[in-house]
Length: 121
Image (cartoon, rainbow, N blue to C red; front, side):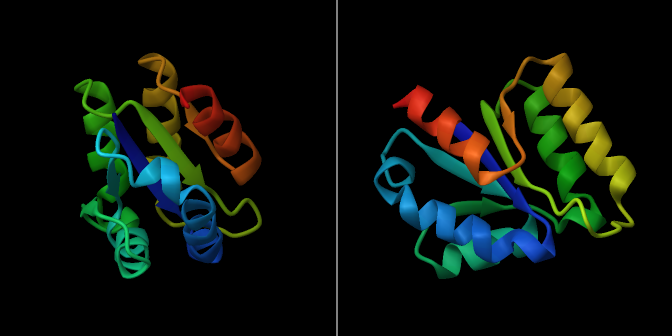
């Protein structure tokens, strides 16, 4: 199962904390993580194996959307910061739309992500 993890700058620490809290799930052999570049760097530093793509503003969100559209990505955990402006907002909205089009579960906050992870367990 491929799970994409993305976090806006103000949510990266929260993403790492979430992964650490659910480390038993994310370290399973059948779970693979893919991430945008900067989030992936922090996640890797925390001890998780992750395929890092481009940074979100440089096309990483679009790369993950493509993986969703190709049927490679099974779930997206995207901790968004709703209080900040993001220059790549069109890419973010495109990713959300692609998840809806392809019926791929998407969590935008830790509470929803926990529900998704528990459902898979």
